[in-house]
Image (tube, rainbow, N blue to C red; front, side):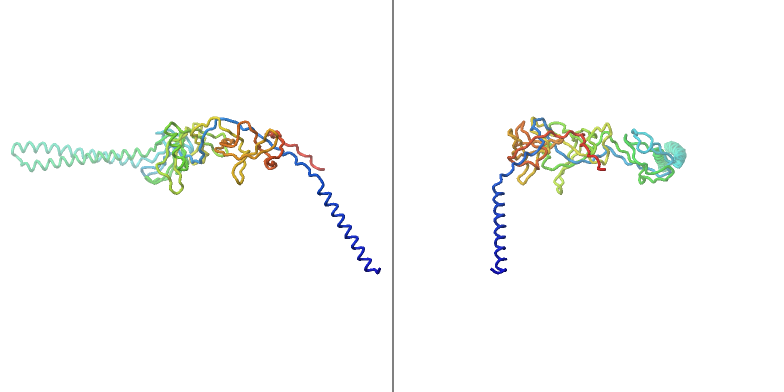
Amino acid sequence: MNKSGSLIVRLLVLTCGVMLFLATTGCSKKGAAPKGRPPALVVTAKVSQQDVPVQLMAIGTMEASESVTVRTQISGELIGVAFREGQEVQKGALLFQLDPRTYKAAIRKAEATLARDRVIMDNAAKDYIRYSQLVKDGIVTQEQAEGYRTRAESAAADVAADQASVDSAREQLAYCSINSPISGRLGVLAVDRGNVVKANDTVLVTINKLTPINVTFTIPEKQLPEVKRHMAAGKVLIEAEVPGRAAAREKGSISFFDNTVDPATGTIRLKGVFENAGKQLWPGQFVNLSITLAMKKNALVVPSQAVQTGQKGQFVFVVKPDTTAEIRPVVTSSVLQGMTVVENGLQPGEQVVIDGQMRVVPGGKVEIKQPDKPGTAKPVAPAEK
């Protein structure tokens, strides 16, 4: 056999050997038994029953129960400020003092004019009385006497006008002292002492009444009939919480709902009132509102982290007595303080998975572990030298 034929034979033998090795390896893999899936490590919680309030949630804006923008009713120089910014004031307390000299001079002038016209009125009245007697004696005509009567009446009218001028001047002088129209908290002083202020134009300060305090919010129009029904039965409680400050909570009640639904948003505006004794709520502040309509007795609740959402809706993993997991569709309603109310799909006492759902396979085994205690720190590995 020549060299080329010998080379071909060697290649055929090598190829057959490789194919035999691959076939043997494939058969050994097919014949190997698959390893069992280890149990999924999960944390569970029991389905419990408790009384749960039926609530509506909303976002509201706080408003002062009374708010007054203080302006001056006369023009003049501001010569006195009797408060500090941010101070609490009572109704009637002195706030500002304007220069009264011009208005005191106006009173003196009006009083002098009044005194002069009173003298003229008295003389005119005496002349009319004298000419009336002369008419009876036939010395003067009735027309002459009527002329003096007209003068007396005109003088009396002048006196009445002068008296009105005196009263007006005194009223203007009273406006030089500006007192608080309500009890409340003062805002920023807008004008400093020494400035000239204009009547009904210059804003001096704003006063907000904080106790009580109001909140305005909106709800969907479809929820209005239920709110009205509960308001007809009594007070509807409302709780306000300042975002990021769980301790800043105030309880109040709904006091008003608007007479028109906003057609653009399909919502209606409501108003609530809080005593705000601790002054935790502030005008302009945004708050989270919980409107309690009723109390649902013995409702089934689970931790909210147990409820998952899939393509077919919400579901939970239930751990059966044989430690296998079952996927269970559920119908939920409200969520309150980390607990979700389950309307359908669970029974009291069942165990649901609250942590480790990603490792759970429906029908697969699970191993229940204890949840980590809050505040425990994991050990830190020492740094490599």
